[in-house]
Image (cartoon, rainbow, N blue to C red; front, side, top):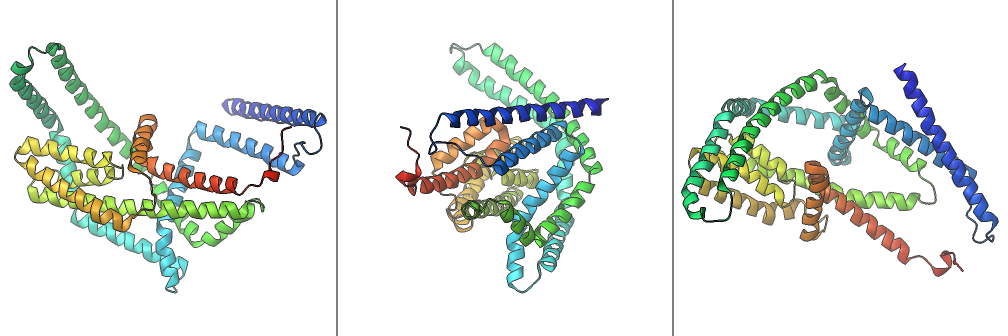
Length: 401
């Protein structure tokens, strides 16, 4: 019964789309009746059919995606495989230039990745497992220590701010209730992480499909590219292909370079904290490396856990942590990033900062991560449109009078 109702819902959407298409068509016909030949809006039947079918396919995909289930999981798997192919394609091309076939080159890269993960698992895997277990076991104690530290700091500064027109009691109650809520949130988060891990393992087949899909995307890249090019309208084919190359040139260097920079930050931070003697150094290093991909705000976010654990262990370590992180960030910003990432994006720092804040405000962490690539893409589109508009001739524009 539910399937029948869903089918009726699909049919209703298609019927409404058909009515709208007919309405637009007859509106154009009626408008052309009162206009001269030069002003008439002409739409070919083939174009109209393509537009209508595109709307029907878009509605169907929207309904399928909204319903969730296996299709969503499969599409997500394919999307991840495409992204993985995008990152590995330069390596495959490099091996292809050395007279190594694409299939064999992909297998070599896969074996290299497996070997790298095996080495990491055997070397730092046990240490990461121990740190995660220790952190989960001692997390309530750390929260209590942070709370006691905050109360002690308030008791020291309290006499100096008693005369301020602020309701200190209510602030103290808010802080206490905030920490209580934080305990509950962290506890429920741990449970959610465990449940998510179980679901993740139960869907492990998708992990197997990702490299399989990626293998064929990389191996048959020329076939996929030819099919996409063939599907483009001949009139706009050259422009769309040129635009795609420009976007790929800007985003490819930036994204791959940022991943290398994040790896550098993560490894350097972990090694520095291990040398200083801060607990959970590897986890903090991974945290700092992941968040470093967020421009300007990422390094600050990555510094916070290191400072918290340094304060809880030995306040004198805070100075060493700040010094180490500062040196790492200076090396990254002055040497590593200019060398690897370069000026591929070419955005002003103010534009980047505003974009990150807007992306974070609307879409959270994902918006902050995608802010710079999105702005860079719009910048390429803007340049493309400006160039096309500047080449337009006056006679190409239909007069209104």
